[in-house]
Amino acid sequence: MISASAPAKIILFGEHAVVYGVPAIAIPVSSLRATATVEPQAAGSGLRIHAVDTGRVLSVGLQDEVEDALVEMAQLVLKRLHIPAPDASITLRSDIPMASGLGSGAAVSTALARALSSAVGKPLEAQALNELVYEIEKRHHGTPSGIDNTVICYEQPVYFVRGEPIQPLHVGGTFHFIIADTGQASLTKPAVAAVRALYNENKTFVENILHEIGKIVDEARTALGQGDAKALGSLMIANHALLQSLTVSSPDLDRLVSAALDANALGAKLSGGGRGGNMIALADERNHDSVTAALYTAGAARIISMTLS
Image (cartoon, rainbow, N blue to C red):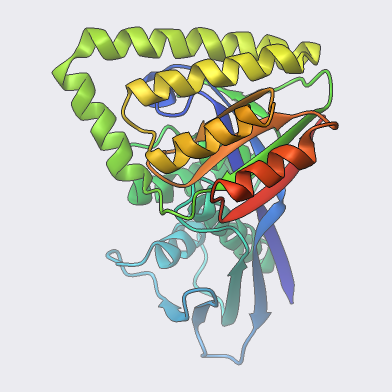
């Protein structure tokens, strides 16, 4: 029996703008994970995927057309390794909330590909794994930037520019983040499409916003490297305002952002596709508990605390 896992992720800066070539910063959330376990089966049994969280049992062949992303992920691995489907059972479990901006789909795909390739004795290196998971991300999201699969496959903070080699992110201090879930589903594909429609309607307006977001991302990179939490918090607030201008916030997200700031968080913003899903606040050790309590009072459905250092 072989097991493999992959983390959730959170975008700190640059969501949506990253689709247009603007840089973004993302970090893994290692406390939330998707796990795949492979067990050998009797000869002739074929390959099956048991997706525990959704109650599905899927058979994997090598036919060209498939309707399920998990089956396609397994097929891509087998084709990349030039091997037939083994006689095995893959059990998938995830504690990452779906449709919440935490990269659930990419994490499950990564865990599945990592476990399957290891089970057949040909573990995929990070770059090859990343390329395959990105193909599945296209299925989920239409025109994804690639940031989700990259930070999840490498499981390290990254400064990401679409189409360029990944750049590991230097962190020069300790930052205390609080991730709060609105409890509302956040589907990336329609949110990205809405920004594209806005871009097509008013290109100059959107390009100006994208330019400002790009400046914020680069300033945030510097703040992270210098361990400057106060500067980072201010940049989060500015980034949220620009995302509001792109119409990807929501009343629930704005309420949680305001609650965090009213409780003296250093900064707060939505994270990911928006229009639901998660926001992220930056606190210090002294007000971490009060910010957390304020977010629950404002209606957060789930809260995750994490430290970046």
